[in-house]
Image: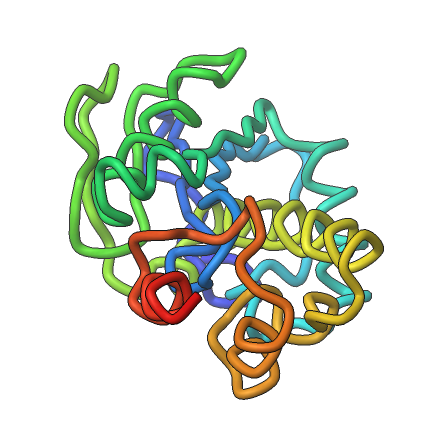
Length: 201
């Protein structure tokens, strides 16, 4: 166990932790990270990204990229989310993240209760794994920092929607902006509030 109480690895195997960010928002890609940590280069402070400040997440993400054996960020696009549904798109992005690692893992630990089909190695699903397993926590941090940066960039183009604050989730501010300013190309048309807005337009 690490100082944070997270499980570090399974024996001597190379274990990839996998986590996603962005299943719930009304727009943008779903982003997934896969991380294989290096036991020789420990990282202090890994935990569920939602429990960390933005500044701490950013610092840890840089450290993870610098010290991990392998990191891959993958995604499923808005078009794929609308075509497949958010669950299937997330599983697709998870497989892409694992397949994109420059060091192939012997085993994967996936945050949640589902294992993506077609993975190149055995895997297990770990409910609330980002609070239990270091590699999943690392993946959650990398994925969140990546997607949040994309939401900040989108905010620069469309400040009236407030993406820097709600990150695309269906807050009152976001729903009001949808009604006032309309649907962007980045919105997920299969999601009910967006679909309703399009119908009203």
